[in-house]
Image (cartoon, rainbow, N blue to C red):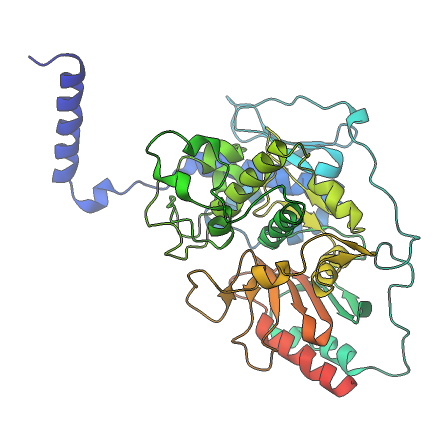
Length: 462
């Protein structure tokens, strides 16, 4: 009779043979209703928390209308059915989903936005003194502040304004549209009760923010993007992932695999899992630099590499300080329970703050007379030098390329996010276009057509 490891091997083999004898359908895991409900509770807690207290905040009925609809179909019914308990004094949102488990909890942490705790974790309120107030720059001149931000309004509607009025003709459900021309606001419109200080989730626009933070560190010599990524979990002898560079992570060309195409990272966004525990364990599937595969994990790993590199250089990794320097004082970069920033999606910001980021790129990295990233960084992030996605848009290093879109200048590039979040920069036209929204599968903005319409309007306005 086999004992110990041999017995375990025989047992595993027997299970495998038994499974092989089953029909394929019987081997396919069924949807897990319990984990979906736990994730739904985390989703409601997180989005309610961030929507209530990031930026100017939103009323509960608007949160229900905008943030808790049009989401993943497997959790939406649970998200809608669950209720949130809101502690406005402690700024904590709790959502109960099972009688024998603690509620799912999201806690507001000041400039860091909200932190979603893991399934089963209990609240540990932070001392309010920890949350230093963000600088109020509203009275400073644009672009650092909001004073004199708009171009003088001429009589009658300009072509750019007329293009903005036709926003519904491009599809989707728009909450904000802002167009900068030569660094000043030419068009600024809001819908659905939103305003200048309404912070909205960026979704994957955050990936372009991560690329910007990396560019700032590269300019100061704190990180070399062409060097292998500083991921401690990959450094054991014989681990092939040690060859992956930060640049390959930025270009979605790591070669890593994950459980879903597109790599949704539900466990981080809704389950409260830490960035490090979720991202560092996936195996290599393809040689690094040879395949394009859009993945949240690649950006999260690039941010971990940046954090480790800046620490080696004796520098703090502080996204909030960087964005405050741009006047983006209503931008909230959220992190996990361990303090690692979720820079693939969990950033909340306003239309004006996104316009400031676009203006930084239009100006080639210069801001208020100081250089924040190298003059060739814009060229680096917009160069399709890695493997490319199939489809209408190319990909650089954290930014999408619109060089194949009809009626759009070849130098146009952008930050794209789910549900219709867009920041597009066209340096040759000195144009920055920001569009935020709440699109869903049935109603989506055609960003290429919107940009082409703005360019055509700009032609008429010259």
